[in-house]
Amino acid sequence: MRDENWHERRQLQRFSVKASATVQSLSSGSREVFELSTRDVSSGGAFFPMEVPLQSGEKVRITLFISISPLRKESKIETDGEVIRSGPDGIAVQFEGPYSISPAPPTRS
Image (cartoon, rainbow, N blue to C red; front, side):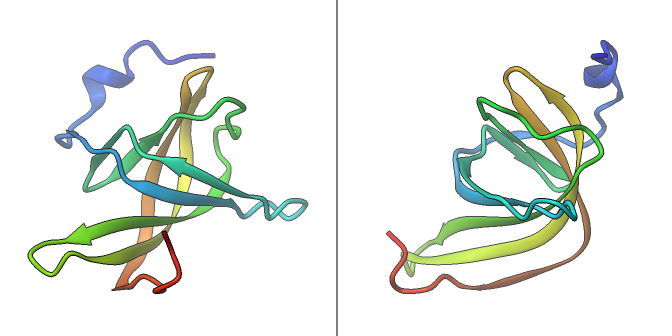
């Protein structure tokens, strides 16, 4: 069931950012990895459009790939999260716990 008041409860400012990402399901039965892009990002989470969304409550590992100016080198941000909203347009993920920032592998395109 879709929560019609989710937008009013949002307290963190979201930014329209399209960043490459991987979202890995941490379910015990599946460790599937999805190559996605963000639609928007805040300090507390992100929205990922996807055709077959994961279920609300599912735990995930997220890796966001970003370019850091003026170096123009790609870096990655890794953290865990939980799917807090799932619908036909994609998933909203709340970031959880610590995160790390490190250089992305040089082979990534």
